[in-house]
Amino acid sequence: MDTTTDTRQRIINSARDLVFARSYSEVGVQEICRTAGVQKGSFYHFFPSKRDLTLAVLDQLAAYFRNEVLGKAFAKDIPPLQRINRFFEMLYSGQSAMKAESGQLYGCPFGNLACEMSTQDEAIRKKIDHFFQEAEQPIAETLTEAVEQGDLPAIDPVASARAIFAYAEGIMLVAKTRNDPEVLRELGSHALQLVIPATVP
Amino acid sequence: MDTTTDTRQRIINSARDLVFARSYSEVGVQEICRTAGVQKGSFYHFFPSKRDLTLAVLDQLAAYFRNEVLGKAFAKDIPPLQRINRFFEMLYSGQSAMKAESGQLYGCPFGNLACEMSTQDEAIRKKIDHFFQEAEQPIAETLTEAVEQGDLPAIDPVASARAIFAYAEGIMLVAKTRNDPEVLRELGSHALQLVIPATVP
DNA sequence: AGTTGACTTTACTGACCGGTCTACTAGAGG
DNA sequence: CCTCTAGTAGACCGGTCAGTAAAGTCAACT
Image (cartoon, rainbow over all chains, first blue to last red; front, top):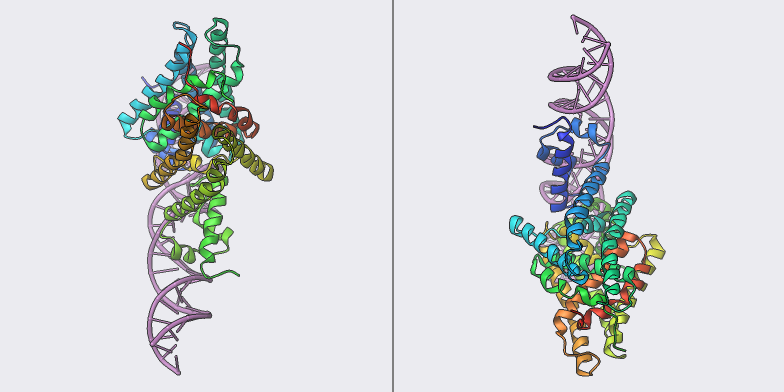
């Protein structure tokens, strides 16, 4: 049964769904309230502003990605380099499912919001920036492990992890622009190459 | 001296500057008019809607990038693979200059708008999608040339070009989120690796 | 001189924006 | 039974949104 502050969660869920299907500034507090079945007064009882709600949404989403995406993709049940491929396959299947459900490919919620808000709201920008850096860590650890196991020559795992993460954001953006999840499958398979040192002039 | 339809161009320039410093929905027709020194009525004399203005802005921006960025980066005055590095260096110096001027890194105008508008406006999405595909062509041609010259093994130049372009968009997004152009220099240097076939299990 | 039509100006529409305010309800603690 | 408080309800604020309407200006052409 809905406890008292189930209201708060409903607001967060509605905001998450609406904002990431459209964009921050295209979604109003009014519409969030309507979707959540909540009145304006309740909204401002729980959140001092739309901006603060967004921060809360980001926190919950980050927790979700940490546990459900990063945690599972980089679990140590398979060899390190295969985990990286698994991560990209999860991006593909995740976006693929969303596209099948809604007809539209929404892309990365963090990337989308970062694009829209980085120049507008420093707190939001910083939160996403932190999450990005956090997301690079399991990749770097995986690469370190691969180097230790001799699967990879001695590379800089941190720099390579950042490159891989940036590549992930890039293919999500291109896939969103093409509105076609297959982009993720085709380009995701190139990700590991970012990690192999160049041997050409 | 300002010809008659210098007004039209002033509107386009203001919209370009405002929208790409902030975002599509954060900038109103009113503000565009104020900045351009133009009245509402004149705006709607030249453009049937804000959306159509945006399309016009995109056309002009695409022409600019075609000539000033892609054209120069992939000019045949240096060996093919060096052109790719030159492209990424140009992204770095371009964003770096903008950050120095405004204090903020705006990122890729096409990527930004694609992020915000792809799920909202099909015409804008398609235009950006076309530009993306157009931008991949000189990269693919350059790779083909590199293969012919023996600088590269027989790879798929089209797929690799798409990967490189997506990587470019990705590092621009991450750089914007970090608000730090150095990201572009550090990660740009990894781009060529996307092109070298993986030799690891 | 008269007419046309491109362009500008200005006032306006109805809807919506984020946010505030006050009144109300319901349940817990005394 | 009373009070206190967390939460809800909804009217309301000034301001802005994209877009419209209609009157006016001015230069080119007949």
